[in-house]
Length: 263
Ligand SMILES: Cc1cc2nc3c(=O)[nH]c(=O)nc-3n(C[C@H](O)[C@H](O)[C@H](O)COP(=O)(O)OP(=O)(O)OC[C@H]3O[C@@H](n4cnc5c(N)ncnc54)[C@H](O)[C@@H]3O)c2cc1C
Image (cartoon, rainbow, N blue to C red; front, side, top):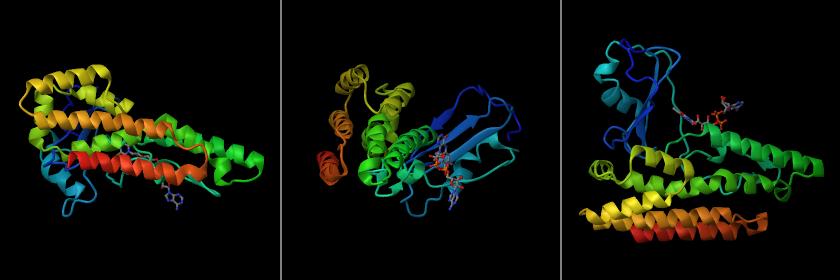
């Protein structure tokens, strides 16, 4: 709880800074119905040695003037699986949903909505399998088709955007934002849809070609192409368990080829 008033409490703020939150971001979400109360937090990549989110939060965020005299009302933390989904949510007699199935948006880490989508897809498949009297992978498979088409395809595409963003330095990020290549609203739109809309691509390519960073232009072109390829691959998710391993191999090849091009 803050001592002072929150300015513009209707705005949720996300800050990207590789020194403060390497590989992640910190957030400042005011509670609109409880004056002075804010949800503040920070996430980092889990594989970075010696970087603890609680320490980063204390050192860089809670030391800011707006937190002077503030009180911690509730604290907590957990791992967030910001990546593409499990390649299958079901198998013989087994089904997973939510974080256990890695159904989190890879860019912003939001997982509540997609957890509910996975729960809907899986529960419908379970009802169907039970009505047949056999919870085999084949009878539960509709859960995958349902989830991958609704949200998994977006997660797959956004996973390489996450990788791209995590590799950008603070200077690159500053460049992208200050030159207007991608605005905060546009990044939000990309994270929501899992693809760059044509208008955004045109603007980025026009602007980037006018600027002095041809390598960034090439990387952005590659990113857009591979995001579309991966999304399409998820839309062609196999219709039966027997074809899963071939589909997974093809997915791995696409991702490997993306990383090879960007090396
Ligand atoms: C710090 C933080 C901030 C986040 N902010 C957002 C956000 O702003 N928006 C958003 O969309 N997502 C956010 N997420 C992600 C989101 O919370 C998760 O993706 C989502 O809650 C996953 O839902 P779930 O049902 O899979 O798992 P959970 O919500 O973790 O639910 C699992 C439940 O199972 C219980 N459980 C565990 N083990 C057992 C057991 N053995 N027996 C019985 N019960 C058990 C747990 O106590 C828990 O209640 C955030 C995550 C974190 C860590």
